[in-house]
Image 1 (tube, rainbow, N blue to C red):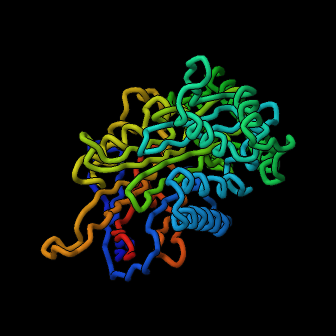
Image 2 (cartoon, rainbow, N blue to C red):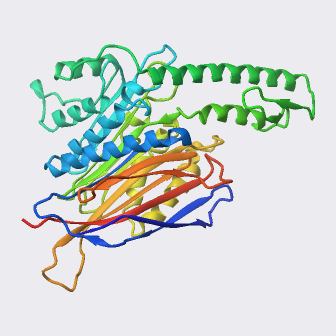
Image 3 (spheres, rainbow, N blue to C red):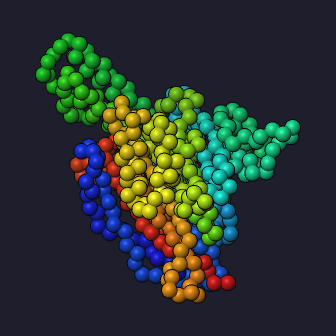
Length: 445
């Protein structure tokens, strides 16, 4: 039996900081469905990045999330491991020209693709990651292979197998382990997107130089029109003012999406999480973001002696912000408390936006998808009732928007949603949080 996911009306919560707007979505559990005999259960939640998703491309974003969910569910129904299911979802997301991952990735300053990816298995707690990897179509497949190889034990001469490789070394290891190289290049969509970013960045730089000259000439009280966005800004008010408007127009370009990810729970209650990213547009060659770093890009941990809930987390957003707050690990720890929604909200407010490690930042940009599960009885008073897997899933972001998709093995199709900050909320200073809950019952034999 499965309780279908449901999302109801939105209400605004009071925040501890006057600069933070929290959006709460109350979750319902509507009608039930019968689980098909012999059909394996499981659940997947994916995201196509926290950033800005234009309405004109909403259909494409939702479609790729739907396909990613379907790929993961197909694996789970076939009895595959949670790690294989989450990898299948990520490969689908990496192959899309609309996401910043795989061959659709942003380009660095040299016009090259360098990708980051990682995966974590909640059952074994093993981790695999690659950073600044070029020449491989699906970086997450290399991360998953590193995880699998690491579970085989020590290498010859007692060497510990690697769990994290970067650059040329990661590429060589992948090829040596049978993962085919792909010819250098990038998608046409990625090229056009990065060309647009470069042109915009050049205009922004010119505007900033002009603003600096005006400030130095002490033209007090004058107003400067920004060529990039066409809006007026104070030239010398001492704050970010016009600079913030101009720079944020670059951040809000529809192609500026960082990191795709997925979290999965299988029939046995094992969880897994993964992320993959092309990194920031025009980044310095060799830059490695949160998608490759332990505790920053993803986290998965099965229930244990000190963890009453199994949790899986995947992050997205500004890599530097996510690295300095170790957000994936922080969210996982917070979800061990009774109220998952409140725990995630407080983490995003206090450990991310309000983090002392980001005190100098004017806006903190990021998002997470989280899943937690535990065994329970749907009808405790009935002794013959089979234990069910209760799955709570949430997404939260401080960016303008975040595209997600989710599906259980009993659903006919995936559901997708583009979450957006409410009108008037300021990106980088506000938090949106939504989600749902479902029950997964083991099928009859």
